[in-house]
Amino acid sequence: MPAQRTGAHDDIGPPGRATRAARLLTEALSPGILVAALLLTVAWHASASTAQAITTGLIAAAAASFLPMYYILLGVRRRRWSDKHVTDHSQRRWPLLIILLSTAGGVVALAAAGAPRQLLALIVSMVAALLIAVPVTVVLRWGISLHALVAAGTATALIVVFGPAFAAGLPLAAAVGWARVRLGEHTTAQVLAGAAAGAAATGLLFPLLAG
Image 1 (cartoon, rainbow, N blue to C red):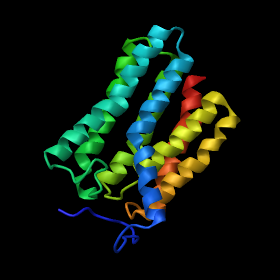
Image 2: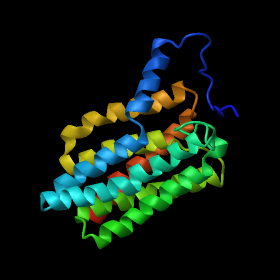
Image 3: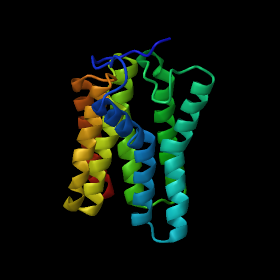
């Protein structure tokens, strides 16, 4: 079944430089990679010991990134989904629900493991963002961009944790949003909605819970 596209940037013939750049950004800064890197970084920053950082960081990354990625890749292998980004939006219900449930399970596991408050607050804020994106996508059938949500949320979270010097990540988040529109996977409105949800979750809720 062909992937459902929302934009109008399909190439005829070999892809141009802009499309190749968009594909590279989509892969290198995919949600699974960014979520795992952010959670492991915050775990290292917030933990009282190396053992705690490794333990809680791996729990968080497994729940919010590794396990959902495994589920999606297994579905691709079994031809349940179009590809690892599930570009056919009609197939996104179960992948999104698994991401939400697994991440929420990570909150419980981290609380039981005595995770640092900052790490726990971060993953709770991720669940909050998903509670916006998943129903809108699954129930209303309007595909908020998870790439944009995670990229904007990651850039904002780094500013919250490490200060304004990390605002350099914001242009990268914007580039990810551009890439999703360029590839025709989302409209500009879907990218902006995702970015707003991610930035609000980690820019407002995260510091409130971590404080």
